[in-house]
Length: 318
Image (cartoon, rainbow, N blue to C red; front, side, top):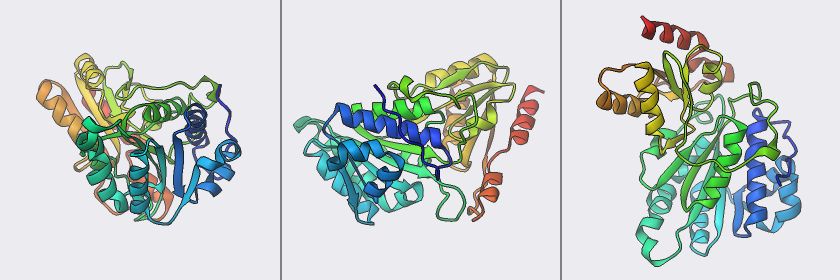
């Protein structure tokens, strides 16, 4: 039974946040080893998820303003059997945690695997909007590191399901919530009570004459267009079977990502398909390699627009 979490009126993506917090509540109810660590964690759950504060206050831990230290603390707790969810708040702050995530957490189960029960760690962060140091997206960086899973839900169903799966599956999961995603869409009336676990590495697929491969907020820009669609959901692992099936069917692949195109997830998708299927026509769209402006409206304009995506689809059809 899923307990519905009170919406946060300050959030821009109520449904995704509500869904992930509902999943966290259910995980804490089912497993006493699940703990929440984060800067201002007690205040956040008071406003965002009062049920968690009410029922599991002894497992909500407010931490110092030290992202790297907090992540290392969670790694240590995992060695004692705790399943920590580390709330880093902004994805930009993850740059401060590179050592603890990439050199410690990611290697933990590989180094100690034969001698102990594998650790389960979830690192939760939000993609914010606007600002040179408050709007960055480091997902491609973490997808490069062995030992890490990277998921970016674009619907409440996936937000709930991936959080549940992350806390049931040994390993380290980077769980990103995209605050540029609005509540508008076919999932606007989604009921939290229908939530269930979602397997890692399973993309959503819609057939079409041109296939658009995307993830995160860009799904909302692609959804209304007359085209095929692959929402990756998980960028590590990637559902290569679905991506290849879509490319094989349409023969035309448009990769649209909400991040800098240079060295990004789209480049890896393009390289994989170009090597496996040289006959497939491929085009990429993404953000320029440029510092993010402070205004959220300007930040949004850095990403491929619906019109740009539609033109690229038309070009591939010629």
